[in-house]
Image (tube, rainbow over all chains, first blue to last red; front, side, top):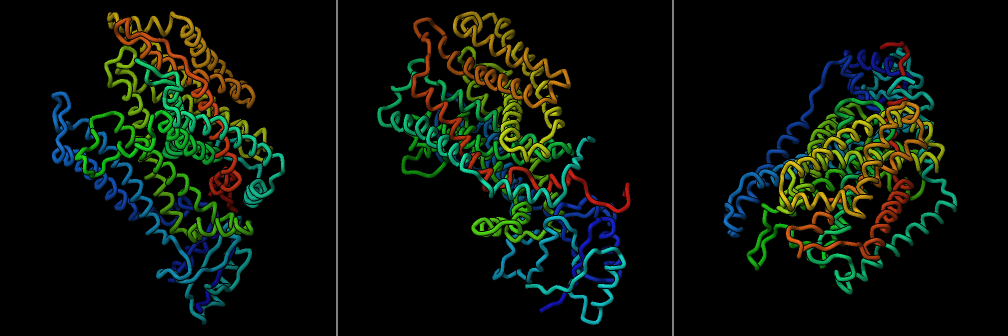
Amino acid sequence: MRTSVLGLFKYVDLLLSASGKLKGEGYSVTIISPVPLVHEIEHVEGEKKSFLRYFTLFGGISGFAFGMVLSLGTSALYVMPRGGRPIFSITPFLLISYETTILLGVIMSLLGFFAIAGLPYFKGLPHFKGEVECPEAAIDSFGLLIEDAGDDKLDYVEKTLKECGASEVRRVEAQ
Amino acid sequence: MEEGTNTKFTYREVNEDLINFMTKTGPRYYIILAVVAASAVTLFFLPWAYQIYVGQGVTGLNAPVYWGVYLVNFVFWVGIAHAGTLISAMLYITKTPWRRAIARGAETMTLFAIVVVSLFVFAHMGRPWNLYWTLPYPSHRQLWTNFMSPIVFDVFAIGTYLTSSAIFLYFGMIPDLASLKHNATGWRKKLYTILSLGWRGTDKQWLVQARATMFFSSFIMPLVVSVHSVVSWDFALSIVPGYSKTIFAPYFVTGALLSGFAGVVLMLSVIRWSFPVFRKYITETHYDRMGMMIFFLSLVWSYLTAIEVLTGFYADNTFEWESIKYKILTTPSMQLFMLMIFSNTLLPLVLMVRKVRSCASSMSAVCSFVLVGMWLERYLIVPNALSRKFLPWMWRDYCPSWVEVSITAGAILFFVTMFMVSIKIFPLVSLFEVKEDAGIPMEKEGH
């Protein structure tokens, strides 16, 4: 089992300074928090890009194509005379495509979210690498998890976390 | 209190308040829930079963008025569904902080309102088991849906809206369920563990969560506008006097938002009165901001109503004129029209006064009238226009039967039942967003 070090912080600025220090020294650092700290982290580390937009873009484009193919294609395959109106009428077909663009865009965004966030994350799934129990960070504390620090560096990491203002530091093992 | 901050509680308190609210339920709640659910079954499902057994003849629908109260309710409930998504999506995009405490409740309201919408589609259909005829699928009849029909637009728009709203609601709830599983026990713990999908709250996960929320919001905003526009085209694309109006799309969207916001305020008030624990989360600030929105929407709605009537006069068309005369100068429509104007135009003017806006009781009173007024607006369009369709030999007054009235009342109770069950299983306020409201703790001020 891998041993990791978990530092719990009451204040986000202390957490971020500890995170920056350990990241700078080459450690693998994960922040666990009960609230999103996107703005705060980007304020320190700069804007981060996510692949999610490609999922969304793909969903939107394929949704639009699906709507157009469905309405145009089936109008061609099953000709239905409608009082002299054109068989292919782009305006109403655009409306159908508009809705399918949104539908598939939303669905693909959700799937992209799951893929990037690594969800679902349960025991038995191929990407499951163990989970560190840290209920405090789901409620009112901010956790800084340093994974695979190496047995000889554990003491140093613990000391650094304490110096940076962690209210509690403990060694944890991924379950 | 500064907008977007609420320091009346700590992070831990939020978890404890929510889990206590969900788990500690007194017998009074169960009794009320049982009565409401039983009434919903009695008033909604039994008359509907009777209608299916006997046929549509038990309703007040007859030539030429084939669209009655069921479709009035359909349009009304689509409107109610609008504010939830708007509060979540539009106010998220514009980074409006006061939305945080009320967004989840409004989203829940949206989802159940769309369920009610779907039920009215079924109630309106004489043979609801034939719903699949509206869906595109290959069949031996070689018939496909008519993609030029606004009814098919509806199927796509409402279907997309239902799916997107459900996704939006569940997606936003994942971090909260992960947080609550630590406070929960028994079946709740199992349920929250499964539904939270192993969410850990890492920086990577929060980043993609924030990006996804932005994408969802960006998709759902135009969807909100399109759904009620499409609903308005059910009417506006026809040639019936009173229906065929180009102003209908913005008119319906504005009306939907007005009634939706009023619905949210009323729902928040009932929650605040029933469960005092929520008073620290839903504050005067929320009422004040919602009051401003309702006041603004009321002004826009009033302008569009004036346009709707005046363009009928300008048209100089006898059929259109007869339709307007029937709507605003003939009893009982005239009285209903006056009540609508009072509820949606005159009464909301009191919201100019900040004290009125900030007070839960006065806001609830105004919003109750707005809801009545908005229902009347739809009633004065849907069956009324058909009652004066072209030549006098086609005219016929419409009066809903007891079955329609009962199903209308039952739908409200069914909505309340779903809501009452839901808020005891899933968090009514977004934990992580409310915690953001309390502020991100920093040792150094102004970081």
